[in-house]
Length: 465
Ligand code: NAP
Image 1 (cartoon, rainbow, N blue to C red):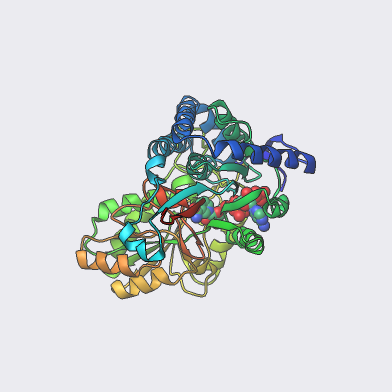
Image 2 (cartoon, helix red, strand yellow):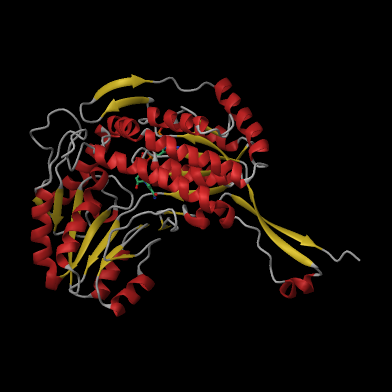
């Protein structure tokens, strides 16, 4: 794939970039290794000062970097600004909490005495240079939620960003440099995915984190496995959104729309499968469809736009194929199901609600990465849970119920990395984020995410006399 900024609202190629050659990649590796040997010895206070500066710079750049993101991948501008603000907040969170999250642990001497230890300490030391292979859909956030904890832990980072967001990728490296992180601490490598294998096999790269599709995750994990290197994988999702009779239906409908179309429907944790109890199904379906059909689709730079274009022509065709397959096999499009006729240029697709989904349809098992919702009617909680779990993915999940017993069952039985009641799935720096099943493994955010790229070291002290 060419490394280029192509505006999805117009299809126009605005800027192209040459991929780094082998010599330039080698220079990056040398710089990363050198930087790691110094950065790992710096204090938390030193790192925090720079991370806080990065947050301030990002706040000051908020509008311009938001425009860059919107130009490169088409998210509505207000959402791009909110993404930048969330990144700054996360940088501040890690700057403030890292020292406490990675504090030495001191097992009770009485518990380890029979190992012969006078005492023992568990220390969290950085692993080294971590390769981050990242997607375009949240081009700042996906990177910052890796970079902030990794840098605060004393690691160094190499970013291979998606090929369609090169300007955002370059901005990120420049941001950390301007904030005072030493040369080599965080570098953007403009490279294609074909260059990832050699990098990952290089002994100077200690580990990798990948956010993206299942095929990309499988490929990187296989190479890392061969090299016995740690990986964290954040892959696709097809989150269920359960609505039970005790739900506040107004809120459930309003939130359902946001949960489905946020980021033009291209979010791994978007609610994609709406599983509704029969007692409230007809009301939910009617109100949800009305709101989806009423969304404003258009230029993502316009403040009143709800849904912009998909990020690529290929992304739109993939989505169209899923919808066409479902309709061909008997699903009904309650709204949408086509390209908006008023937008001839750009990769737009109408917000779509499909009912009558059956297991033989591709969309029942595959991820719809765009503003397309599927509706299911269920008779009871057991059927709702079985349907929610009938997916290869297990990232987030949402359930609308005010019944404590139902909440207990759902929190126990939904196969997912997160269960969100009476709200939509969202990430927060203080909460672990990640998936089960084919949505990946490992966690990002919170102390758990930060420790993924630490060497948890047991330090054992024998008796001194
Ligand atoms: P993608 O095609 O897998 O691309 C993601 C990144 O992986 C890009 O940098 C891409 O580089 C690279 N890549 C692709 N194939 C590769 C390979 N064989 N070896 C090494 N690197 C490879 O994914 P996408 O279509 O951009 O992103 C959408 C997917 O990401 C969706 O499935 C979505 O659910 C998932 N996602 C998951 C999360 C999460 O937290 N779980 C968050 C956001 C998105 P190029 O651009 O150069 O191809």
